[in-house]
Image (tube, rainbow, N blue to C red; front, top):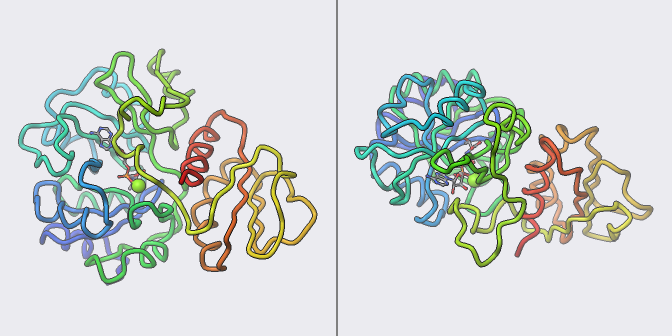
Length: 312
Ligand code: TXA
Ligand code: MG
């Protein structure tokens, strides 16, 4: 069911059902974190592997004590600086938080979205809300309610309709149990901004493939359209032809592409990239050429999503 009412969507959450909701990053698929059956249903609706923990969403810092055992000083400072906003802090989990939320880990990801509709929804839920991105597992994250509908129609009780999301890439996930804190997933808060607040922050540019990934989600295939994604440095590396698509800051090379997108800047690129992937699928494209951006600021998160979408 579609609704524009945060209260109506929240009623589904309280009744143990699933509701998708907009945030400033991407749409989330929410369940009451304290109803284990509802949380199980999130994994089922998405087809999400059971070993990939969910982030817990709160309207404000007031309920942190319900889900967190102790708040490390680094998490305190990050929440102070960036919450409400697109930051997720990995911290020790409260023993009463159902373990299905954290996939059995003794840590939990905590996020306070800075988005008016998300805030109204979470306040009306009056319970911490466990929520991954509201896409079928492996698919591009949903930045519009229509994308949620495309992936989850008939599998969830409710979609809270909002505008297309602002950031377009997900929150920055920081392991605050590590010293120094470590970025597990680059996201909408740039690592430069984290460093300005915390000083040292570990940022593994590349996870050695034989290391166990520290963020369980990073080992799964992600963000991928049906089309094959090729990440290119120079736009001239893109190969035109039937069933090809191009997205990048530079103009595409001469030749015919079925779909072309030239975002004005890195922010616009991040904002549009997942919707572009979905558009390419609807157009039946076989190959997407996506130009890398300079690895700084939001560009790191964008490059990360492009590389993951290209991984097979
Ligand atoms: O912007 C966002 O973060 C969106 C919106 C809906 O809030 N949510 C989101 O959730 O992207 P999801 O589930 O698609 O990605 C969460 C990431 C996954 O890579 C997961 O493995 C990691 O965060 N994560 C969650 N809890 C964790 C934990 N306790 N320890 C390590 N990684 C964790
Ligand atoms: Mg996701």
